[in-house]
Image (cartoon, rainbow, N blue to C red):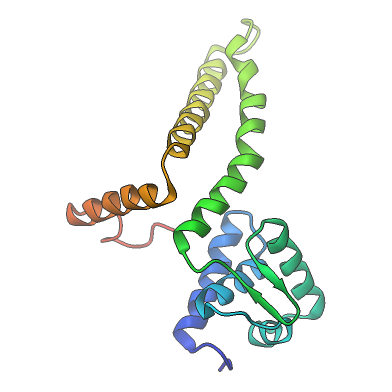
Length: 175
């Protein structure tokens, strides 16, 4: 058993590593981030490494990645992360948007002007993909006009309504 977390909390940290890996994030960085979030207080590098059974190299790599993503602050004596999961989610989504939205539009944009040399079915499917990315860009632009507090309320209301009417959350297994 770990020194800082009980079995249920340790399972949460491992789950976050699995979810993060599915999003293309480094699992060890997700473990470190999850531990810091759950503990909600600064932890020394050595305590984090011991809790998560990470080598010094893996620990350095995780903290370097988290620092570059602006998801942790501190130094060897004490690392911490923002305690509000909504702010963490918004910050992570913003970083992902910065990395992925413009390149997606750059790759898909020329499909708007397929010159007939492309198979019509391929051209239609590429156009649908471009429309999806443009819709996501429009949603992204719209949500930027909302404060994090308002966005949290909107998402929370939507989630509660979905649960009330039998949507996601009642059936489990969606992640």
